[in-house]
Amino acid sequence: MTLYYVLLALMTVIAVLFVILPQVGNALAKCVSAVLVLAVTLTAYHFLAPTQDMTQRTASHALSKEMRSKIDYYKQHPQKLLFQLQHRVAQQPQDPKGWYLLARLYHSAGRINKALSAYSHAIQLKPDDPKTLWNYAMALSFAPGTGQLEHAQVLLQQLIKLQPKDDRAHNLLAMNAYRLGQYQRAITLWENLLPHYSPDSEPGKLLLKAIARAQRQMSNTTA
Image (cartoon, rainbow, N blue to C red; front, side, top):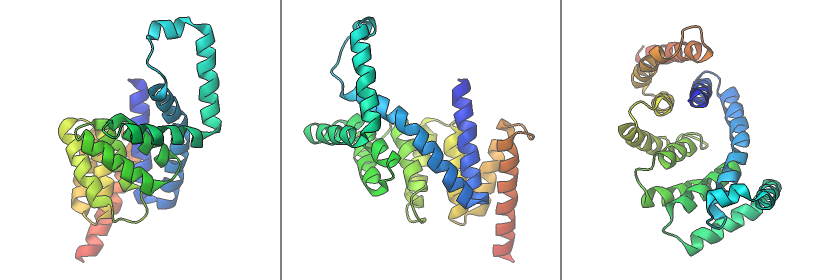
């Protein structure tokens, strides 16, 4: 649970920095994406590996060593893992997890159009999957330009219906509203998040700065 709140705070910082200092926010988002490559590799490897009883897998030292070796190999040769997943979804196109993991690999590699296409397949097959909704919305939100933001907002609203207390979704919804010029909506969403953070914490301070900036932008628009 502690890790969840650490990641949640980090996502708040990234999203708010994207509004306050876009270049810094973009750079930080890329760093986090690079760190997530390992997690995606591990998940994809276990997805592709033959089904096996977990007790037997843990008990076998030789197998564990082989698994570590293969994971290290895929970390060094991500294209091989990508090819395996591409083959998997070609053979089993109705498997949403395969499409989801393929999208994550494309996304972590910066191949955004391929990632969006794979996410689209995954969400069509499993429309109410929170992980797919979140990562698809993230990919759309941080894609170049603002042309994908409306679609991201629809996915985030769907995610919030499933998980009303998901601060990540509310925060990203606010950031996108700001970028779409919906300043009052962004302010309201960020104000709703303020009680979740200490005023002296970095996320709390950044939220206040984002609210202030949205208020200035709204004043300039109505002036």
